[in-house]
Length: 254
Ligand code: NAP
Image (cartoon, rainbow, N blue to C red):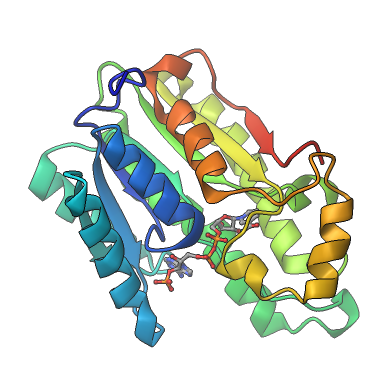
């Protein structure tokens, strides 16, 4: 069963895979035998340490993983990390555009600078990293796969999240265009729209906000990072070979 998703030895890059959803994706892919590359920004004191801890946990379970520094908003760094991966492994099979940030405020008070930070990371960053990886992804004769981590609020909107919802909706448009542009080269491009998932990003919400959110979830609970990770593993897997240009919502029925 370990090989049921046929990801053994596949080289897969996960932007921001040092914690949260990205970490769970990295762990799941490594358990399935993939060669995983995660990234860290180094902006906070814990950033590099988180990445090192993730790599150590994966290696303890006999997985293959490395961590490299990356700021997805910087095109030179995006090109450099892809080059490093090609130099080390000779190929790349999969890309997960997971890196994301959220700065929340009502639109009337939203600062231009915060808009730029959020949209540049969540939307432009996914474009720059995809663009850098594409010339190698198209070389995979049996096909390759890109998964963009969007959000349910990119589909529904959410008061107080003007830049975040706009960036996540934009990511869905990007998913569709890339899927259409690359289908003839056997690169599949899909998105996941997670609902309310337990991570550092959602920990910052107050208890009251969290309780209110849970009431809107038909399954009556927040999601687990592993539930996003398994969906991502399926979309990366050759087992989903006839799925492209799709968005799977993983949100407990929201
Ligand atoms: P998280 O715990 O806050 O982790 C965010 C990750 O993104 C970190 O690894 C961080 O790296 C990285 N990152 C931030 N800015 C970056 C940049 N400029 N360049 C490269 N990496 C950068 O977030 P999460 O909750 O796991 O969310 C992961 C993805 O899922 C995001 O795209 C988020 O929008 C989406 N999502 C989350 C939820 C949820 O409920 N949690 C719901 C829907 C969608 P460092 O730690 O090294 O800085």
